[in-house]
Length: 304
Length: 143
Image 1: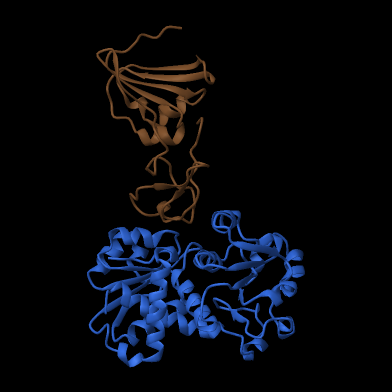
Image 2 (image 1 turned 90 degrees about the vertical axis):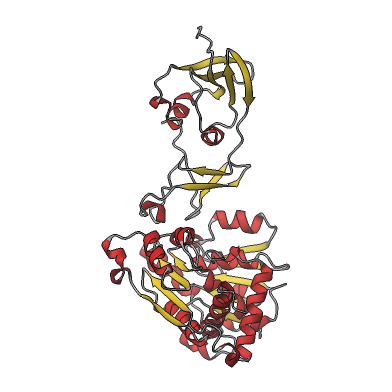
């Protein structure tokens, strides 16, 4: 029995297989409409996340399965003091597979240690969110046709952004990938990611504070939000916030086939005016997330 | 200074000077009822000075604790007044309930009776990370 706790739990070959399955689902959804008939997915969301939960639920319904679960810890036995382990042991009796989000880092690992059914980490605090990375990877693959020899720009909050760290981990395994890390000094990529992933694996990367200067080099631009609460003082935030807001004029120097991505939700870091640009891929990412979750459910349930 | 030799027991030698009380605590030697001798700042040809712990009874000691806290030590098992086994503990791959995760966002802070487990992620720099949240582990040396 397999679980997905971290994107690195999957080999590049397995990610390739998931992408093939997802592409096949996109081409012929009817073929998959009954694949999970009589199977049940439990969505255990100990903290609210409407979009991720809906994506999992839509994925299971499109496979012909059904869904049960809760959308906040207040509506679970956690509010009575039940441990994660006990909740999972109970839910394992009802469901064939569990997708869980929990505010505490490592909670899905604890779940996997006691569960009788596969566990999918749907986000554990600021730690991991591997199905977001699967959505990102399918988007990159469908837009670029390959993961190799791409220059990936990561912009905004690179310090606290778990999606950025996971994507770096995942993309670092493909040859010829270069990273351009675009952020204010205060929100640079943490040293443990720079040293343990990029330096250790001899991955080419550069760090800059200037989005405009980096723009012409990029094949992928992955935007994240610069949040006010991450700054020590208001003046720094006001000085920097507009530098990392993507507007149509900032895209003038960009490649014609740039792929603009964002894990969403967006607040103001990508102007709505960019949405109509054919290079905007962030809503495609949402749809791709559903297809990858379908492929993942099939894999973990070992459905042919 | 002369400490009686032991007949059956364990001698932990080549302890980094000043570390003996930390090992004493982490090995739970205070729970023993037999004689335990702690020799601090004994002369050492290699390090100048060292600490030594002598335990006057054969016990199961947690080799992982030794390997983690002071990997340079050597352990001598004594039977009938003779050294029958001598070894140097290596850095353990896993530490089980030796150190506690301090990350307030880690599930190990909340989950009832969850075992704290750290894995060795960087042998060269002796870095251990919590298996749940991947935070770096820190031992409370010299406490």
